[in-house]
Length: 436
Image (cartoon, rainbow, N blue to C red; front, side, top):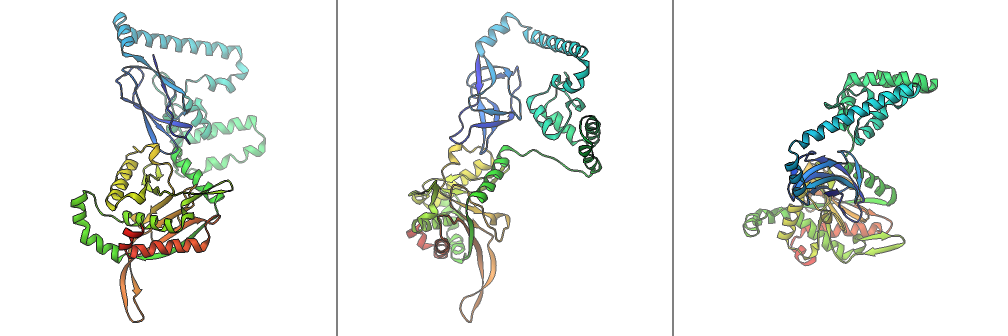
């Protein structure tokens, strides 16, 4: 017998939520087969079988929150399963019969207890319903009486999906609200009952969806960043003419030589590293009453994925060439979109770059990726008339850039000069080879 346990998932992660089981009880599994997907605050992790055998028991269901080291299932080893099968070919059917008998005995016990304690049956009957923990949790959150859930499996059991389907049914919503009203009339004072009809009258269609663990964590961290940091944003604009010219002239040769495209992110990463060397407080973090200045440059690149924003890290960016940066960013972005990032690829960044321009954003104020104290926002390249001198105007490809910083350790003048340094290096790309 082999227990399926929740593995260690990184220094800052202590729990996760079972997102999906890929196998069912009784299924045969081989070493390395994916058993389930676990959703954490940062990434989704796949838990694989550590031996051949049969999935004997699933102890925790989809939607359940589980802790590191917790046993969530059991696998019968291949040899044990085979020997049992040889000695008793019909054992699966016998097991099912035993389960059915146990279910009937439980139902009989419930009926007996109901007759013995009839006055309290209405309050306690929900506790005897065959419902998964995740279904009970969802029902509590949505104020649903499990007795009213008609959508069940063939054995009368209720799962999370059954509760969700019930809550999304308009007729069931009205019935549930009505039943809740009847109970409120018996158990609650008139002041509480008076608020209920507003819920019944609001019959306009809505869809309620539970936040994924990652989305909830993102929301929590963003609010925390705004609450704890003295966040301020300064802006500038960059003339992208020189970079566009280099990309136009060198793009094909670069692709042929390095087998990767020459994008904008390598230029911006190099410019950020160069500016961080000049203004090291932007590459620091606050630890209590200390300032920890980092002498390495692990640059986080914000990537929009299906489950929410993630920030994989380009390690030692100061040591990488343009092709290595482009290749690394491409690989990390691909992993982010297929949900295959490792925890180690998301930890330890010293500064972050986010590019809202790919979605058409003209200007924004990025939020700090704490505990970092700086984040650079890129935006859409747009032709705008620019005064070249007192007599000439030209249409130039311009980009607004924004730097959000923690004013607790970064002064405004330092932040402005940092952004000017980034601007100057981008407008003179040859300097990136020297400064970046």
